[in-house]
Amino acid sequence: MDVRVRALQTLLVQKGYIDPAALDRIIELYEKEVGPHNGARVVARAWDDAAYREWLLTDATAAIADMGYSGRQGEHMVVVPNTADEHNLVVCTLCSCYPWPVLGLPPVWYKSAPYRSKAVIDPRGVLADFGVSLPAAQHIRVWDSTAEVRYLVLPERPVGTEGWSREQLAGLVTRDSMIGTGLALTPQQAAAASRAAAAAAAQAGTPAHSAGGAA
Ligand code: FE
Image (cartoon, rainbow, N blue to C red):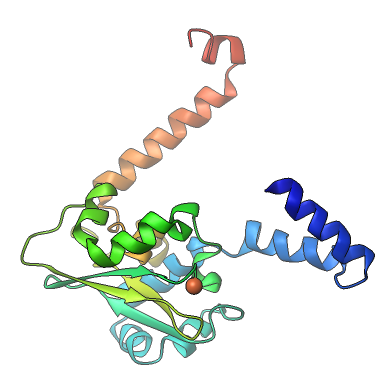
């Protein structure tokens, strides 16, 4: 696959259809600047500010652009809020439509045929695959993205976060929670995750022979 992409790129550059520097800039943009941290800031603001939440739910494109996030694949945004009664799940049954400005590029599973078909047929089963179990009474609503409309899930604000700053809140918002295949982290889960990340970083910092010698 990689070889075919490179061959195609070489051909397009040789024919003068694309500028390699522009291509590098686009790749760098989506690697470093655009990603789920953008969406997380949108969600955190909506949790913290009722007026913004209202704006986000009535005109998501404008409310998201107010945070500085707009552009390709985000021209027509709709934000769907999770509640105690209803959980939202986003899929693109046709291909891989995804709100790039707020989530970056889609994960591989989002583009996979099993996810795209099962999300519609058995959304509760998909959530189980992701380790999410919802109360039976909570209805699951599936949203099929198109080239026209891109959806973003507004997850429920975790309990125990009263008085948290927006930056703290954003740390609880995962990519999957904005697709609907996950929930926002609880403060306990976030603390455990940051401990695990710190441990992994410490492990990576030790010499290879001691870190992975036993494996
Ligand atoms: Fe698509």
